[in-house]
Length: 219
Image 1 (tube, one colour):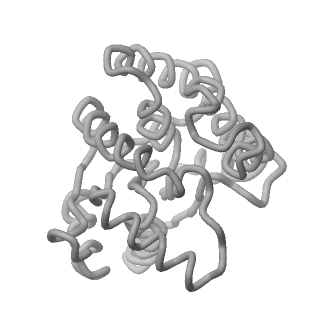
Image 2 (image 1 turned 45 degrees about the vertical axis):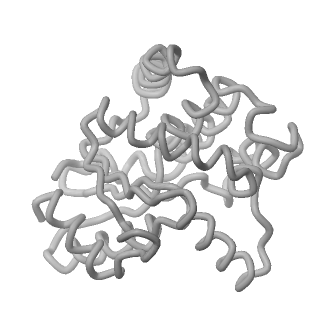
Image 3 (image 1 turned 180 degrees about the vertical axis):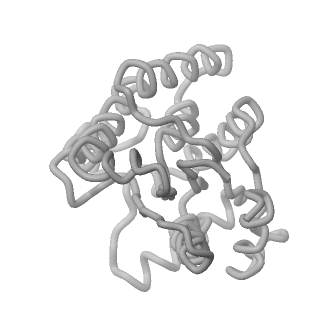
C-alpha cells in the first residue's frame, strides 16, 4: 500500500469523499492515519493559489503559464509539509492520505502545454518538488477518471447547492477537457491506478468506488 497514498481526479469525481472513506477504513483496521488535502486554503502558503484560482492573475487558466502556476501549488505543499504534517509522515507507523498532491499539478498544468512538451514538464515537476524541495514522493496514486461532461454537471449541481462560484478551472469547459486527456496520459506514464468512476453519464455509487480503491491498493 505504501506510506503516502494520493487520491486524484477532476473536480466532481469524489476524490475528497473517497480519501476520507479510505482513511476511515484503514483506521478501522488499526492503522494510524493522517489526512491532508490540497490546496490548503486555511494556510498562508496558499495565498498565490487563491489569487490564481480567483482570477486575480488572469481570467483563464492559460493566463498563468504551467511553470508559474506549478510553483504556486508547490509553495503551498512545502509550507504545509514543513509546518503541519512532516512529523506525521516521518512516524514509521503512520499512513498519510492526500486528497490531491503534486500529482494534481501534473495533469492540470500539463494541459496548458503542447503535447511535445509534456514529458519535459513531468521531468521538471518531479525534480522540482521531490528532489529540489524535498517533498515526499507518493507511494501510490489512485486517479478517478470522470468524463468532462459528467464532471461539469456535478460542478454545476454543487455550485447551485452551496452558492460557491466556480474557480477559473471549473468555469473553463475546454480546459477541463484538456485536463481529462492529460490525466490519462500521466496516469499511464507514471503507473497510477486509473479507475473509471462513471458508467456513461451516471456516476458509480460511493460504496462501489470505495471497493474499487481498496481493491487496487490491496487493503
